[in-house]
Image (cartoon, rainbow, N blue to C red; front, side, top):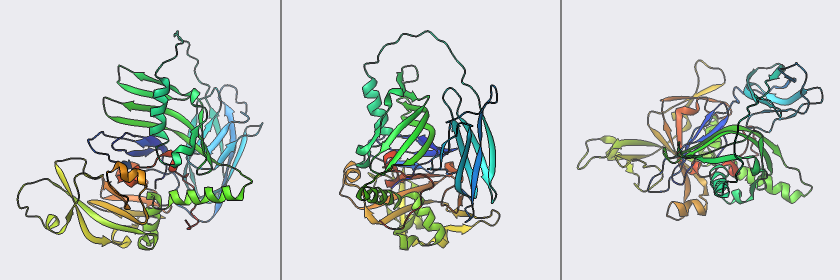
Length: 419
């Protein structure tokens, strides 16, 4: 299962990468002759968790005259914490633990503001000033693009996903999408001036997502998007419906990268169902290779989610790694942990099989979920929440790349431990 990040996302029919900057989601895909799913590690701005909870309060005002903006939207990006300001422009967000957060504020006719806050053990008060949007008058011909429906279909498949949960995840106002194909750039591009309203009936979330940019490039074979997301839990009087939502959220969380890194920090990966093996990549060579790793390792199949370059071969070392072999408390940063790995990691989740649809796309029967982590630096710093501080430090591949927005919970999700 996957987890949502920043809000920049790359997607395609072959592989998918997700990168996260200032809490926007990124997916980067490279087309290949086989189906592959790749996801980049995500940045969450929740760090240094402690038990004390504080409040973020403040006001939202106009930069033009300093007057308060009532009913402006204020929230912590990619979480369920936030709401709207009062008539006097004030807001209060409680239940915040210590850490670093990205606070988003928006109002119709004004530019969206992003503020990073470092929260310790005291309440924080902030005044947010919004700049009015520049009015640009330009001549254009109003004409309906006959391909718009096809463009929106492509957008939804790469943004919402194609899983079973995606069938119950609906964008209710896709008419606000400014979408079209740019011939010069050979790319399908989209954005919104307001929030897309997305009802995820499978997980019980109403998501407001302001799409700053979406680019599906035929020339570069990549799909990227970024924006800001605010999760609101749906309400129901039906207890059975609420139980189903809670169960689905747990299903999405369990086996996810967030679940894995939290268990790695807690030192209970085996109990949580994860098996970790080191993966060593070597250039493909003919004949006998004088390499101990190659001799002891198990070669991975070429037609799989992990061999994206025919010039290289991946070898899986059979000895499973323990949390102490990978993750240790930071010597210099309080409440931070450092994961050290000079090669790659294969993470197998043994408590749940792959979705049938994913297995079919891979051309085989369902098996235990497998994902791989590629590191771009030997040491990666994590918060106590199990979130990598530098999203560009690693790349996820395999099952963690299969699910998209329809199968993701907000960053502040707290697992019950039950499925």
